[in-house]
Structures are given as structure tokens and as C-alpha cells.
Amino acid sequence: MSKETTRKTDVLIVGAGAAGLLCAIEAGKRGRSVVILEHNAGIGKKIRISGGGRCNFTNIHTTPSHFLSQNAHFAKSALARYTPQDFCDLVKKYKIPFHEKKLGQLFCDKSAQDIIDLLKKECDQCNVAILLETSATNIIKNESFHLSTTQGPFQSQSLVIATGGLSIPTLGATDFGYKLARQFNIKVNLCRPGLVPLTFHDKDLRFFKDLAGVSLDTIVSFEGTAFRENILFTHKGLSGPAILQISSYRQPGKPICINLLPDNNAAILLEANHSQKTTLQNFLKNHLPARLVEIICRRFFKNRPLNQYSLQQLQEVAQFLHHWEIIPRGTEGYAKAEVTIGGVDTEELSSKTMEAKKIPGLYFIGEVVDTTGHLGGFNFQWAWASGHAAGQYA
Image (cartoon, rainbow, N blue to C red; front, side, top):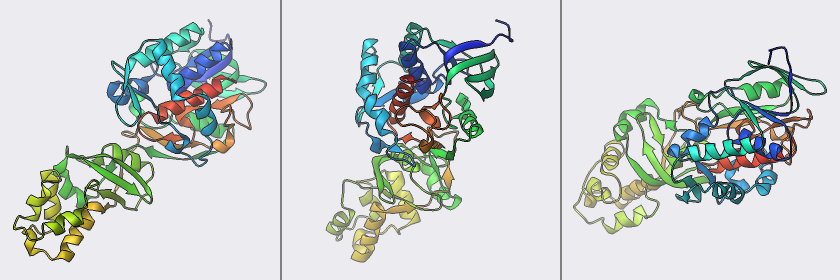
């Protein structure tokens, strides 16, 4: 094909990630001719690394309440029409073994590559053409969409943007989807890293950096939103599932609250042992990691025998253990963020079809849209559901 020859197709999808591939499959099933443009050298790069390489491909407990968006109702329609069970049925069709790890999170037994292979086979069956290492350089619309690409010009009736967000730029993340939305005068809400480790201020890092690698079960909260999971101390600050979850809700300059003893009442424990000669540090080592206790006593409390504290002082220790407040310096940014919060304003899109209200035939799906899930397979379910929705209409 010469570069001057315009290749025509019914549906052109930019991005061969989870949302783009599912959309292509659904459109292909309807007899539409479909072409996917992918600027990376392979498909599903984010799928491949997810879940430690085993792909946490959905969560059986998915509800709209597991998503952040400026319009909390937007995700309801797509999620109701393509459920976790629907994707599980597809996984079972290919006899891919999987298991529930915890909290409804489903993982492949073997490898995330199983999910990529499944999607590729489905695309092949629907005659979807996937062009790798192909970038769109210019897009205009009159009666149809006209794209200039590194593989020559394309023309399509429908154009689906499935380019993802800004998270993990090493996998090829770009702002292409947001730029295109703005080109067509579609509002894009402010973007920021989500599901991302938090960093400490220098004064806190001096004390806590030696705890790197220490992990413990906690409840982490911010202004009424709370998650119970592990936290992990790092060389830069805090990570772990509970921290990643709360990072999507926290606001700069405000403290997060950590309950270090979610299963105990520290006040009752300390008061019951008030007469003991054992030191505070030795007592707390029965309930918390020794290295953490050492730092807490060094930083916040003098390490004396319990019988040398007043009841008021022990109450203050208990208050700290259940309500440790820390103001993070910031986050580790898009390089370590699992998702991008914000994106194409959902008010600009049909919740039924994902089509832009102002531009007939233009669709936005997946992470590029201002709909972001919690940790644990919810973002994949949004990719499948939004891709399915657009695939029914594009």
C-alpha cells in the first residue's frame, strides 16, 4: 500500500490496551471492519505487568461505589451491561485457570500473557487488524474521520480513543487522548496520579527511612474514607495497598490517619498493664513490628517502664497508635502510579455508548475517561465495560 492510498474502515481504535481490544472485539462481532493503531511494539503492555505479572483482570464485587469521578453515576450503565461474570465467561471459554486472591480479586494462575492471548485470538476471529508501532499524527473530521499516521492515511466512520492515561510512562503512556479531546473542544478534567506511593517530608524521612521493607496491617483514612489493608514503609515514604487506595482521595497539605492497631483497643491494653515494670517498647513489640516500635518510642515517646507513665500519658500513646496523623510531602508521581485520576469529562460523553455528545462517531473509553477504580481489578473491569459499551455502537 502506497502512503498516498487512504485505507478505509468502519471503526478505527487508537490504543491496543484492555479497553481498546475489548471494544474492537465487540465491534467486530457486529460485522464492522475494525483497525487498531498501537504505537508500542506489542499489545496490552499494561496488562502484561499487572498483578505482578498474573493480571488481576477483574473484581467480583465491582459496584459503581468502587470508582472515583466528578460524576459518580456515569459508570453505572456500562458496568451493569458488562459484568465481572461476563469477562469470567470469556476467560473460562479459553480454559484459562484463575483464582480469587482476596477481597474478590481474580488473578490468572499462570501468567497475564493468557489474557493478552485471549484478546488477540478474539480479535483474529473478528478480523480485527492491529497495526503495531503506528502513531496518529493528525486527525480531522468532516463527514468521516481522516487520520494521518506513520503507516499512511486512514478514513473511518467511527473513531475510538483508548489511549489510556499518564501513568507509567515507561510503558508508552502519553497525553494523546487528552490533546485530541481538547482539539474537538471536549472538556478534560485536571489529571493527577492515582493508586500511587506517598513520600515523606525530610523531617519524617530521617526517622522512618530505616523502616524500609516493614509491612503491617492497618486502617488508613482520609476525611471519612478508609481502607483496611497493609502499609509498606519505603526509602521514600509509604506504599502498600492501603496507601495506594487512600492516595486517590488525599489532598495536598492535609494529613492522612493511620490506625496501627486495628484489631486492638490500645487504651484498654495499656491501662490493664499499667502496673507492669516492662518498658513501653518491650510491651508494644508484642503487637507491632519491633523496628517500628523502636522508631515510635525514639520519635514520639520516652521509653520507660509502663508503671512510670501516668494514665493520661498512656492515653496519649493509645491515641497515637490508633490515630497517627502524617502529612505526606507528595507522591512518587506518574512513574509509580497505577492509574490516572481525572481525564475526559464524563458530562461530555453518553454513559450508554461512550460517544462524545458534541462529535458524533467519536468515542472515549478506559483510563482516558474521568472514571478511576479502586485497587484490586476494578480498573480492568472499567476497561472491559466501557470498551464493550462503545463496541456495541461504534
